[in-house]
Image (cartoon, rainbow, N blue to C red; front, side, top):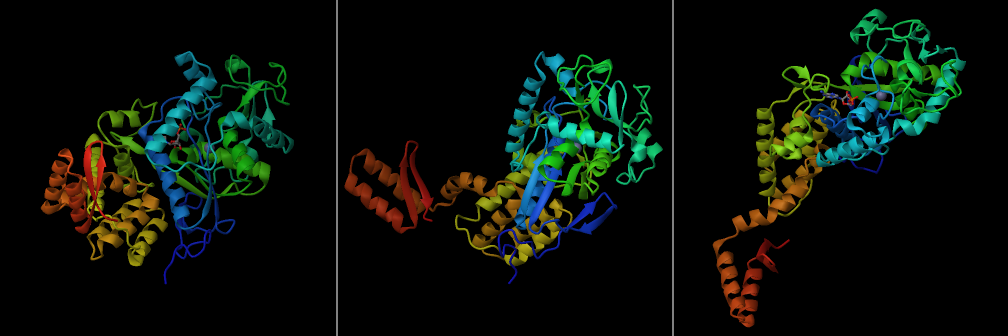
Length: 489
Ligand code: AMP
Ligand code: ZN
């Protein structure tokens, strides 16, 4: 018989296909270690409240995490916090985002990171995402970053100027393999070319270490290093953004990981650079599969701080929306499609979500067994490049199908391991209300008579009425808010 959970940590019978940006096609997933996945997602730069676009990216990573877990894999999921070195342009120009926020809020960089990490974690909890296995902060991996920079220098992949240490892209093997662009396109793609350091050899060379000099002379977060510049003492400086991910991956997950994920904007710069420096140091591929999520757009523009459109979860909740309705909205679009955010679309998703919970609540309170045919259909959809809209369609079909209510309930709860829409918790909350609605009039009459008897302290009659209620298949509990009646389990 078909069984997905034959043995714990054994791989599934259903093949998983995912779209690999490296190679630009769907591929059959094969893990490095049987039954295990190493999965890294570039996490947020924690200088502001993350917007709904960021939330979409995180919910999509959660979908992938949950899918592998559903199929019995052990997932090592790492999502970092960038708390230093990410400049206002991904191309090494501008100010450090965290320091800019420090000045704005008159707080230390650490206070800024702590504050926004906390908000981010709370928001993700509301969206019912599972916690990653590790959430490293870049500032806690400075030693690993320095070791990597040293190896790059020793192997001749990097060079120093008075202002920074750069990765020399001409030395990388197939530097543009991820983007598939030629180098010139790759550079102009991110609106750069602004060489702020006259000794930088090529505009695409990127910084792996900034010295605390030049425009960064007043940096608030800096560390001593073995590197030298005549402008600083003890090699003081801070890491470039790209090397942080490379170092955290190497330290926590190893030289080659199964899956690396991030937004599509990271293809030509950030991920291209991660690959170049990690592969230069390690001599092996950084990741076997590169997964990129599309954007949440608002009026056809990427939702982002710099575009000035950045709604947060708090904005959504203040308008009366349930965070899970937002999660349901995200599940309605495939992670590789753009998704257009409008308040009307969110409203429709909220109505859809509430209807769904009602439908599930009306299935009663007995949980039967998972329907294997529908489980297979659902699994095939979700295993086909994490197709959440089609997986949702299977759920709706299953709810309409000719199955017992008990088995529908069990099957919906099983699917929810992937969807994360809290069917069971919400169902539990609604259950007493719905039970009361469906109670037959006789039970209600007996309940009221018993209340009357209790008021008159006629305990004998009250017990007799309780027995009658029990015999009809209900239990009665006296609470502070009066008697509560439930169907017997
Ligand atoms: P950032 O803090 O800008 O580096 O973004 C953190 C993560 O959110 C990255 O993986 C981005 O790709 C992702 N992200 C940012 N904006 C959007 C958006 N509008 N839609 C989807 N993902 C986004
Ligand atoms: Zn990264």
